[in-house]
Length: 612
Image (tube, rainbow, N blue to C red):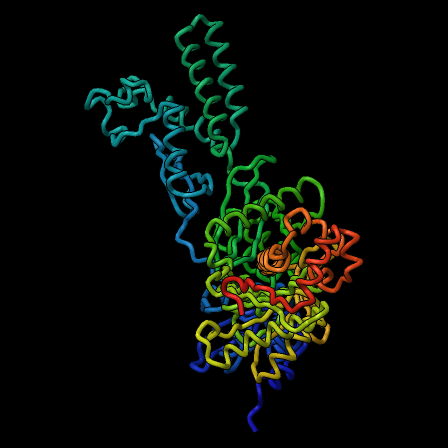
């Protein structure tokens, strides 16, 4: 007999390594690493999984493993294999954004700025990386304007004195380097100042320029002193206006991660405690749990970056944090610390990164996508057989033992569908009975469906009732008796009348507070259904008051109020003896009320709109 995948996984060694999941065509669809291959790979073929994991496992026809000598070797191998095969179910940071560097070749007589995607061992100096090509161009433009370096297309020394200085010289944004009166040494001095700024040595440069300004002033070289003064002011303005230029690369990166309808990985770059830049990626929901996804994202992000911070702050612990630190340290050629702060300023930086990740997700997620994700989570929480596109909810309302009514609301794809709301008079109950009332309302609704009533022709994917186990059991009993298959859950409230959980007929509770979106959805459904029931109950009560009391000779609004305040309900007025009525009304009016109710006068009914 052919070995099953579960049996094959169970025979794997308890050693670190990498596993490669393959589909029926032999394509690698997922690559992962494990401390213990047997435990990790076996877990895919036992128990229940999140929908995305289950979808991947369904496509697995075979798998291979590569045993590694250590967890660190497994990490390196996983990185290499993912980069090579780009499996469908792995996290892939698909992004055409590059992180350019500014290149300056000091060996040239007239060094120029250029933008490069990568550093090279070519003897030139590289500064960066910066946030994008547009940002890098702006940095070069600002440096040239501040230091009055050329931005025209002329080449030096080839084009010296061939033409008169261009408009940049006339506008005072260039020193006119196309004139041979300015030496290469002066040009290189200006380039050197630009390098100081790019290295983050702005204060050192300003001190040097102030010293030269004072020397020129003491030597009576006032024009040169004024030039230094203007240069100092320009650099100070540059430093205040664009501090990011003074950043070689961040010394601390704070990582944020948010999982929602869409997921976001965010990196905040800090230099000397100041925020120097932000980077983020919107990605599909990862197959992995948050901690493992975070590990993969960090490795993907820094793998080809070309520059690495001294410290990386993570929002959660990962199993391979030490291995990631070692790997990054080898790439950077120096120690890179990977930490998980739990308090203090650094924890605050991570909290800010998480908040940014959440905001980026929500900004790119439509209301429809959020509702769909919420319903998907609800389906998973309740283990529903179908996606809950249509949810019907019932609530009972009464005034003592009279005027008992029920309301049914409908939510289609998370939104109220008011045209399908229905209302029911609860009949043949002399005393209040919430379970029997719920049973009657539910039975009448689905009896209409079985009878072919077009107004009740669509069945829900989920039935919710206001109340606990008893109400859920009453509704489920009806559903089963009608041979229908509809999941039934009760909406349970806390001490402050807020929905806190869902409960089934067997008393199994599913808490909602751990999932804010589902918590809000169910809370809104319960409130809307309660509102509808109360509104209908008031409508019916008003109709009852007018038809039952206002039609009695001698009973006007004042005496009607006196009767209801004393007896609390119309039913109690109907049952009262003549002597009891006389305690509230004059004898003539009391006799009129008694005779009205005891001589068979039929009360008028106000059935209400859309009610059965």
